[in-house]
Length: 223
Image (cartoon, helix red, strand yellow):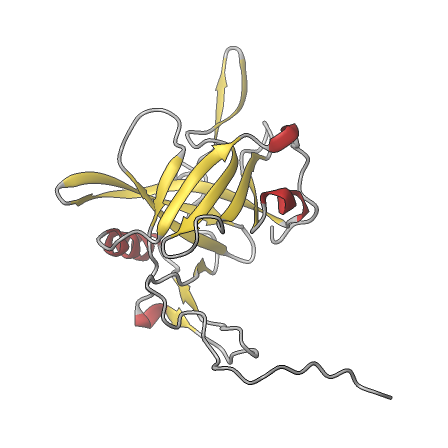
């Protein structure tokens, strides 16, 4: 039997965070930190005319542009509504808008987790809680308080406190490190700390889903 060998010149190995100007560590909880008593967005409503789900955050396609990277190389997020009986975001991610329909999806929510002041100005602290099982990932967000539909957030850096960092053996070039935050107060403390630093980037609403393609993505990434 002949084995196929792939070869390439030796190069200096780089880790995920080597020479990074901004801290962008994965923040994860063993179980979701926020549930229906925590003002999840979207939220359920009912009145004399009917019932359904409403959202302060625009639904459709968004870009996540990290500072220090080319403007033409964003990460794309597609945020759809799950339905009218059960309110949740169907979240898909891809590095190409045209491939969002092919990406796995997770059930997610925006949550305003607290407030702070930066340069003596009020700031709302939010997270995008992505996934329900096993646990959730968190994107730390901030915005200046304002009325109306929300169509942009500052994305905060995420520098994990040493006591919360988890790491197994590396798998080839891929790091296994992440930030284990398993309490609301710990997550709020991290967000307040990160809000004092320059933003990691910007999460911006681009528009409705092209061609009104509202079909559920191909397969779940997690429950």
